[in-house]
Structures are given as C-alpha cells and as structure tokens.
Image (tube, rainbow, N blue to C red; front, side, top):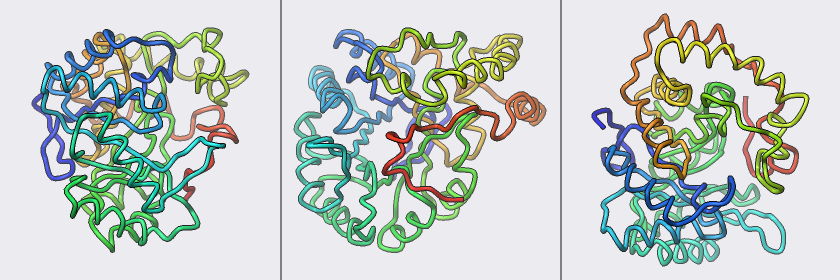
Length: 326
C-alpha cells in the first residue's frame, strides 16, 4: 500500500484492520477464516490491526496471537481496555484494572509490548490526568509504545495531551456518523494526534448490498441499533441507495468509496474498517487507491448530506461511556 499514515511514531498503511469480528461479534466465525483475512491484509500492506480485550471476551486477541505465533508477522497492534461486563457493564480506568487488562491482552497476543494502548471508555469520575499518569508509567515500563483514547470529547483530549502526547483518538466516523467534525478532527490536527475512524463502512450499510436486517442473530449489535431497526432502516436504505448507484457507475465498490471518503477528510485520519473476510479486506484496501475529486466530494455531499441518517448511532443501552460534545 503506497498511501501511508503516521501512527504512534511509525508509518503504517493508510487503511487499518478492525478485528472485532474475529471474536464473533457480527456472527459466527472460525480461526481459518480469520487467519486468511490476516494473511491477505498483510499482503496488501494493511499492517495496523486494532483489537480490544472485550472483543469476544478476549477471543479476538487470542486468534491474533495464534496467527502471530505461527507467522512471526510484523504488524502494529493496538488494543483497548476500560470496559468491563461483570457483574454488569461498567467502566474502570484505575491503575490496577488497566494493568490487569493490559497484562491479559499481552498474554493472549503473545507480545511483551503493544504499539498502542487505548482507554476504551473513560471512567467519568476519575480525572483523565490521573489516568494519563498510569499510561505514562506503562510506556516507561516498555509495555506500550503510545497512548490512545476512545470515544472522548475534544476537551478530554486536550486535558490528556497536556500531561503527555496522545498518539491517537478513536471514534466512529463515516458518511452517516459525522460528529467528529464538530471539533475532534480539528483538535487532533492541531495536536498532532492521529484520528482513527472506526466503522467507516457504517457497520455494513455502505456495502454493495444492504445487510439483511431479518438475519441479524439475537444479541448482534445491529439487531437493536436504532439505525438498523424499523422504520429507520427502510428510510436509511432509501436514502443511501443513490450512493450505491453513484459508486457503481464509476466502477468502484461502495465500501471502498466509503473508506476513501474518510481518507479524504485529512492526512491525519486513519480508517480501520472491520472484517473477518479476505475478500472484504481486498475490497476495503482499494480505498487507498481511490482519488475523489472536489466535484466527487460535492456530489457525495449532495447525495448524503450532513445529518441525513434516520435514528441515533447508538441505542439508550449502547450510549453509556461515550462522551458527548458540540
């Protein structure tokens, strides 16, 4: 992959790989399929992989660890901690919890260090300055290479950055989730922080075929998400259908254009589309080769104007822990 991004002090492919699907979050998977996806990603220059302790209760990390043990592949790994589901969903950023999580992640990954370690969700009652001191300690111990924050507000980033440089901020960003434009993209550019865009394909909505809502298994994220439940889902498909036609007319896959759109939002933006399929990662990596002209971007904006989506990006039970701003 010729197009690169700077992340945590190293140059990586401009399209990363979100590894949540390796844990079965979006339906059943198997190790062979995940291994094939990782092998294809490497062949394409997709060499930054993003995972988290909570994905499949450690399964995604375990699968990656097994692949790395077999192949000795050299990749940039980011993992995350701070979300805990026992006895019920809650957030912790204290030093003890984060150390326990990090050590567990390193064990599953078969690593003595990860290039990037995120606070997956901020514990609101704990000063972010205290959390940063904990993370700086992990850097000094050689356990992590750099610090990331996930789903925080620009004000939190600025407070954290005053303690120690924050290498990356991760938030949902796509053609139908554009809140980062209300200050986060700007703050990251100002501070030299990479903005890592997760779900740039809108959890599958920006694909050549719309996901079958009736086929979402019980417990699957989209089964209760407002944008994928009726009547919103039908309204969203109607709104997005002309975009599929626009991409098709240019010979581009819809998902690749959706990812390319995020790349065109700034040189500091690194999308990490998620998949467990080798075929899909081939398609997604094509985003780095798509050049959208000013006219193209204007046409996309006309088809999918800011705020077009029907429904919130999270349900009431999915919102906790996400910092609001703007």
